[in-house]
Image (cartoon, rainbow, N blue to C red; front, side, top):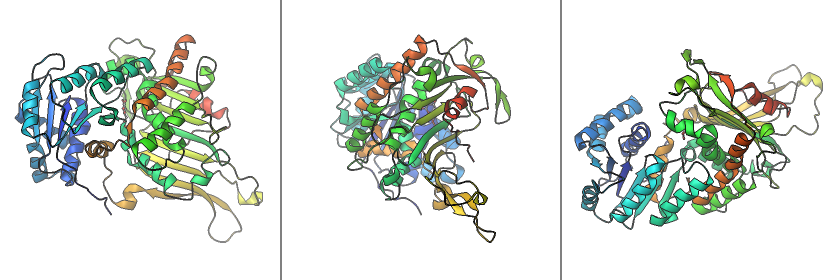
Length: 492
Ligand code: BG6
């Protein structure tokens, strides 16, 4: 079974930072896949742009290597690669001066005014303002222009507002696509399907029936060469402010009236605004910061965070765990435990919803324990959903109870390649569908909640605790949940 491919309208994708890491690892491979699957019209072009000079030919070799490295052999064929490479162009432009802009405009105009122009800012946020103004002032924008902004959108509320103001000077909000690639992941969208395309869950999706929710985004990798960005950000800004809060919102939101951009984003915004503050009064009870020490990852010895940094001295957290409350009727008394970190035991992201214990057991002790139901939504790897239930152990021997999963592993069930999140999102930009992108007020509401945590860490001198690389983080993150009589879900 495969999903339907609906071709998109003719477009030019202009990728600033077109020869950078994101373009190489994610954007070019994702665009290749969409072309390979027949979604791109003949006229579609992809134009890499950056400050360095690269010929069109060299850019095509760069893309060809990216495809070879990041696309599975079974999805590569010569004809598709040749067709994709023929769509590629490259222009040298300088965000800070006039250099190259006329040339880029000439190339775009050659494609005509009718096609969609999607400008993707895969560059440092310090260039967002210059690039937005140049695109607008140099006459590159047409009636069908969209601007795609990669995270981070700011490093606190004030800088996010300033950035949004700048972008807003040149582009309307309905033209701005703020990417949070977690929203493009299949399981994340499946969460919407599970909740709102079934009668089963919604009636029990609330505090009377749900005991607590866990969201784990664990990575086994370290800094991957992003030391200077990461050391200024840390796990709270890098992962919680965006990806993890977005996941939390999708678990917690009220049913939107329709699956459209504003209906969904209005509901997410209400969740963000209902988050109970974490500040100096409770930061020590509700947060844990960690930083990895030397250890092992996948059987290989790895260095500590401080050794990974050039300067070797830093209080930046590479791990964070939080206990979050949502102050509304649906979620009163249901804690959301969040944890994320680098150099953890394995790459594993999941959302676990644990239901309350049954109110009364009719079974005697020989039947064994009645374990609480759990819904486990696995984002990666092995995307899928498991609903854990109690059943009778089959066969004779009286009534013995067993905890078993109804298991829906997507790869096994659908025999289909799991598309990367960027594939869906890049095409949504062309379709003009903002449902899976963050609206300005959402980003700002998330910072409004995160800022007091950052401030409280400073005011209370909350330093990261060391954890050995290859483990699940500092022991205090285990204590954070265990003192409530709960445990982190053990991945299978
Ligand atoms: C990015 C973060 O947004 O997400 C990275 O900046 C992180 O630090 C990455 O590694 C994780 O994405 P994924 O899709 O690999 O889970």
